Amino acid sequence: MQTEIKFAGFGGQGILLSAKLLAYAAMKQGAEVAWIPSYGPEMRGGTAYCTVVISDKYIGSPIIKNPTHLVAMNRPSLEKFAGDVKPGGIVFINSSLIPVRSEREDIMELVVPVNDIAIEAGSVRAANIVALAAFAAKSGLVDLDLLKKCIKEEFAAKAKIIPMNMTAFDAGVKAAQES
Image (cartoon, rainbow, N blue to C red; front, side, top):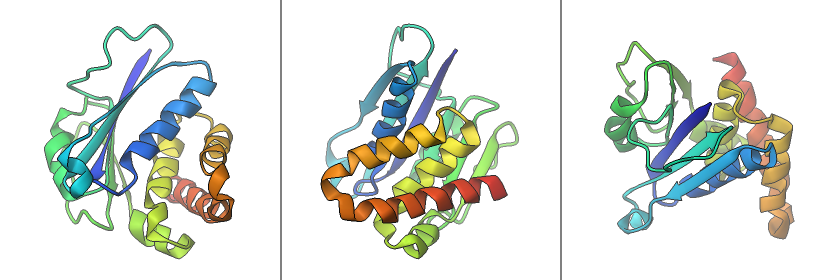
């Protein structure tokens, strides 16, 4: 089975890192994985996005028009990509920055105040970890303990921020479980 996830938000929100961490965890579980980031003017505050494809078979093409799920960290991303999500998918909405909903009846919305939770965990810079953890908890695509381990490995060179990211991760999982 193949699952596609589009991560989208402002450049600087850690969109590419979140997608990379999910892909890395899926790969460690033995899945075939493709990680396709978008570079360009997005790095200056425009919409940045990244697609992750996870499959139990060889991935024929990593280019996806209609992803299974969307992680939208800002309103322009929700408005641009929510209509492309396949029916039955998850549309994750960062309600700290997005005051609207997708207005779709055929998907599951996961609404989490990501920035607020990240600030409470220690820094708004951990918002991507909150979002990743909440999405992973709701979707069940990867083992949460393995994902935590991948995050620790990613930040190994910056060991002093690992505890804050683990707090953010746990808060994201809790938020998904409560929604």
